[in-house]
Amino acid sequence: MLRFLRPNIPEHLSDEQLLADYLGGNSRALGLLYERYMPMVYGVCLKILKDSGKAEDAVMGIYESLTKKVKEHEIGAFRGWLYVLARNYCLMEWRKNQRKPTDHIAPEEMVRYDAVEQAFEYELPRETSSLERCLAELTDQQRTCVQWFYYEDKSYKEIAEIMAEDLGKVRSYIQNGKRNLRICMERNG
Figure 1 (cartoon, rainbow, N blue to C red):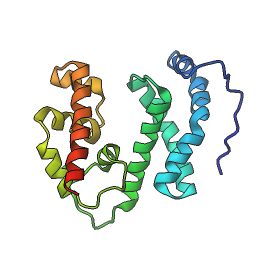
Figure 2 (cartoon, rainbow, N blue to C red):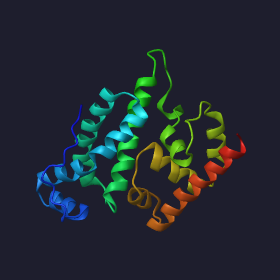
Figure 3 (tube, one colour):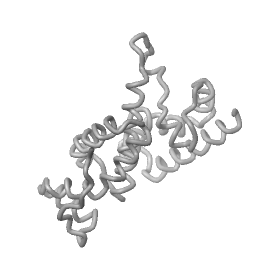
């Protein structure tokens, strides 16, 4: 079982300071920062994977991916960003475990359940056709941004560059698209 002891984490250093130290070359700073939120990450993993062993493995896997992703993304609030990273990581693990060897679905036909779950706060939908219908009802900009953000894990900045749009507009397209998806899914039961 993972131990959640609080090592010598300098409480006076903020998340932002530790993150800046890591980006400045202090690899220990990221470890200290991650340990600060390890109980939260473990809780997210346990909730999704429903197995303590798999949750512990996921906590370690998330740290490994964290070392790369921290350098690739502009992080405003580390705790929230880490929560989303942990959730997406565990959802991907959960989906891998749900696949059967006889599943022969082309990647473009697969539904990104994490996009649906972020838009809704209830169980993952069993039927994908209503999600596909609701995606088709979005405006072109909303659908494109939502698909790139959730299906292809592109950042707001990457989408803005591809679309030659303002970052605020891209954020608006994604937020409005999520809201419209939620409304459509509720309307369709």
